[in-house]
Length: 314
Image 1: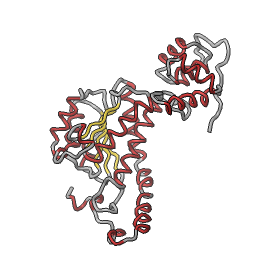
Image 2: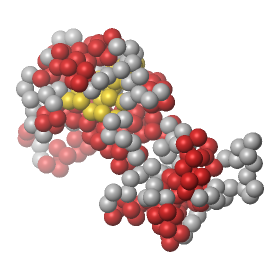
Image 3: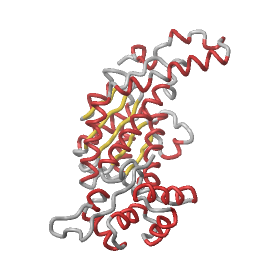
């Protein structure tokens, strides 16, 4: 596809006089354009759902979610990947973000890296890509050679593939099992896809990781029960999560978390199933990490007392 035909590269008629606008008008126009992004993402929800299914399948079989991109798109994938361990308690190796030019390209652009498809192959080989994994390739334009090279290599080893682009009929769509196309239209600053296109890709990444983590037992109700309490804020959040999930007061929640070795999810099961830390851990292991399944009585071993019902929470 010729660059001149890409909507992300087209001049926005509403901002032709951007450089002469008063700041108040400039910001109002920018805000109006930004409000179109969620609606554009909504049109892609069926494809996003199919992508979530692929990620859930991969995680269920021990596979990884691997984001791949260049420039802003690559940085957004890395950003989503690094947020998964503190939010969902995942191992750093479960969700990876690969960016053209390597890790230092996150802070400083590496010119020309996105034009070399072989670099993506090398990056995926270095990550030991296998058929159990799923690769989500991000490219606002939908035609980045680095991303296309990565998708083709991923498919050659049997990995599931997802493409995310901000133009319809994107070139990368034909290289993926599931193609997510979010048409965000012309940017207020012509071709600056860190704006609406970047926002759209961030929303899609939010959905992919959050929905797949929810479907693989990382959430109870709407609580991030696998949060890692690695600082004072998160220690307090873990206590509040256990309290909200079980109805326990703050002191009981804190004490139970301590007995559970700092693991909020184990503490939740201990309180709801009225059991000790070892049994709670065994229940979670049998339930593949799902709190709901872990606290449910089993036919072979009916509970002597009904499990406590968690209180509703705001």
